Length: 248
Image 1 (tube, helix red, strand yellow):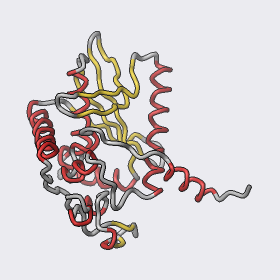
Image 2 (image 1 turned 120 degrees about the vertical axis):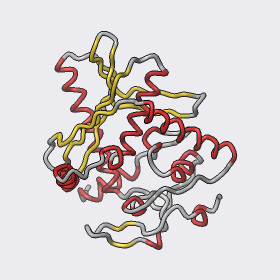
Image 3 (image 1 turned 30 degrees about the vertical axis):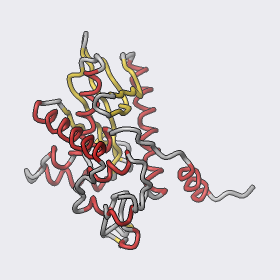
Image 4 (image 1 turned 45 degrees about the horizontal axis):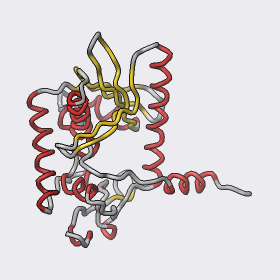
């Protein structure tokens, strides 16, 4: 049987089961409320991730395996792929690792893969004194906040989360963001949960918060609005239009 490598990988990754959203998800909580709402409602994406993006997710899973092997080698006490669900707040998700760091203290560990251009941009912004970590990494930070909050409600004394950004180009851990569940971050977290649950209960369409580059990568974009961006990728120029969905 003759096989083409690229076709094989693209066909395989697009055949994998899509993530199902039975309730609110930490990974989407810091993103667009409208897109999150539609995911929970089971609405199919109009502009889903392409095979390249899906394969990049698989690279992230490989890094999780490397971390797990390293933790085992070190003899650390940890739990991997820990699933949390909270029926009262209608939210659930799976964190990469819970790592024990003290007698009764735990940390959430998570990783994200990025291209080398992202690290160059971050370092240039930091050097210029213009980098706002909470703003630039808001979605990922909110995800870690949700994991910490869920873990605490499940009896784990989680003191912080560590989010490692790993270069897809050379494997270097280029940045580590430490997240603490401050009262301000927790209030923001609970406010988002409350707002989305209210919309789901009342059938009210949430606001769209997509702007800038986020419009281009929204899963609920207008397919006919797609254009080439500066890096020649095909992206949306319009998104989250209820008329495209046909259910709202």
